[in-house]
Amino acid sequence: MRQQTLDLIIEGGWVVDGLGGPRRRADVGVAGERIAAIGDLAGAAAARRVDARGKIVAPGFIDVHGHDDLMFVERPGLEWKTSQGITSVVVGNCGVSGAPAPLPGNTAAALALLGETPLFADMGAYFDELRAQRPMINVAALVGHANLRLAAMRDPAAQPSDEEQEAMQRMLDDALAAGAVGFSTGLAYQPGGAARPAELEGLAKVAAARGAMHTSHIRNEGDDVEAAVDEVLSVGRNTGCATVLSHHKCMLPRNWGKSRATLADIDRARAQGVDVALDIYPYPGSSTILIPERAEIIDDIRITWSTPHPECGGEYLSDIAARWGCDKTTAARRLCPAGAIYFAMDESEVQRIFQHERCMVGSDGLPNDAHPHPRLWGSFTRVLGRYVREAQLLTLEAAVAKMTALPARVFGLAGRGQLTEGAWADIVVFDADTVEDRATWEAPTLASAGVEHVLVNGSQVFPAAAGMPRPGRILRREAMAADAAGSIQ
Image (cartoon, rainbow, N blue to C red; front, side, top):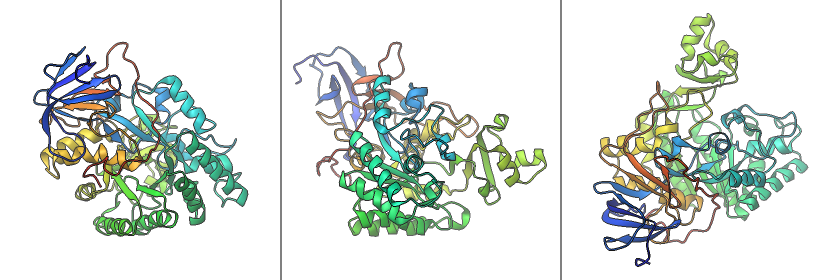
């Protein structure tokens, strides 16, 4: 292998393999789409060499919670991903996805998170479009539970008939056969919030039978967060379906600290055999559609977009209400449909959740927002800069593992998330001393600093270059060997 002419050698860097072990100084050789060699490659021939002395060479980061479903069509450069070292993303979260399309007349407010492109008839058609477009980074897709309800039910706010339940399960099975890695629920939104346990468990059994998974934006992240976590854990416990709790948090000051109980519940479920993981984004503010019912219970709400009042993007709801001479609930209703950032989380609790051994990182970025949450452009570099270098919450090696090998194992992305010979050449080179997020609440689309090179399947995607190919692949869920994740649990 080392006697062939390699396409690329990344020389002299500190290799962090993603598996949690200590860094080591080594060269990384790439041939085609794979890592061909790791070690002393000074005598090897290569078409191109990159000097990485003093820098970290790590697996590309895996964003386990994205809403970029339609951005692969609308804005395929995905600069908000590549500039922070993300080489793979899981889309279709929070119960909404690029397919299947709703029945005529059916819709849901949360679909506005995705983009303007019409939804696809089924997951096969969505994947066909991605293949035709050639994605910039790798993409694994979940099927949205809201989409299933909207596509199968005449009244998606009601309870499904036996025929409608069977239709949803059949659509899910077809999507999994086409390559989806699982399904997601958005139980805090409509129509997903109407679902009862029998409906969710029926879908989870279909997923489990195909070795797929269920991710959930739980029903309540405030006063009833413990019951909401238990509801999703019960679905996994009763069906054997692998489970991920999305962007886990406890909102509003009176609930800060409840993560001690929810994390203990997760650990008990794991001890009982439930395959469960979770993710966070490293910020104390959340972002989604504007929900008028939250207007009076959360003091600081910042508008990210508004269809009837686009001029209000970036303003605080309280300022808008004062200018309009009305209460905040009335102002919120006038702004809808709209998006918002809610400042109702405790930074110390976010950090506590992040340190859980099964916690991954998901940006939950909303690229369709006119004034997005800064997590879109800065989640992964923020972890490296603020949580590792500044706060020293955990070692660089452990943080990289949470963003690479752990999500690869949880989502069954074989050959990803690790720098080992034969693995896919998804690679990021960054400066551990300078890497940081630069996106702020006021300037949320500033690119990160310290990321120097990003490769997807052996091809450069950052820095962008003229004529650069889009080398991403559609990823399927595969069984992972027990030792593939090393020390990652």
